[in-house]
Length: 229
Image 1 (spheres, rainbow, N blue to C red):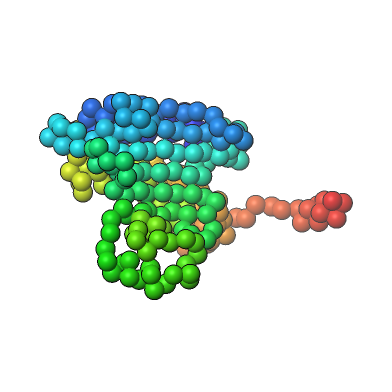
Image 2: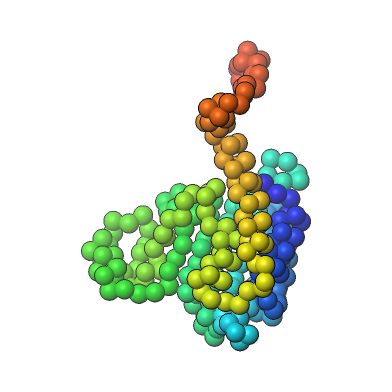
């Protein structure tokens, strides 16, 4: 969990240190119900410009939505999208998405905007058996799982993918920027996982030799409150 301003600063530092002449700035705005949006403002609307040998290759759309956390200074990502576009194309090549509220499909997933006859045949045969509408003609209608809320693809992973796998231009020292951002992001997610599974976390720490005691809970007082309600 991070405060919004720190999160925005870290995102901007990562892309500035990794991608040359991207022409975009992360901007935070307030939405309904105290939700906060972090989106890109640049020469390409809501996207980073991607170069190959100095020429425009495509763009990357990146946005996050944060919900209020346990304290007023903290916020939690409840939705995000990383999408890759070829220059001049309106449809993305692929999308990495996270939607905390999803229940019938994996909250962390990705979509591939490509076609293969074998997949279309499979979806046609399985028509009516899926958790939601799936187009037999579109592989992109599938939600391909990515490992859950705390182990999903992060911004550093996406930047690394763009550079290593897609061949976009990178700044010298980009690996260090990616490593630093990923390290901090994974620590935040590890802490969130520990809060979600405190008993299992305590047991794992005890196995490593730590002394971990459960917090004191006045069960009689808690029971009395429950009865009075």
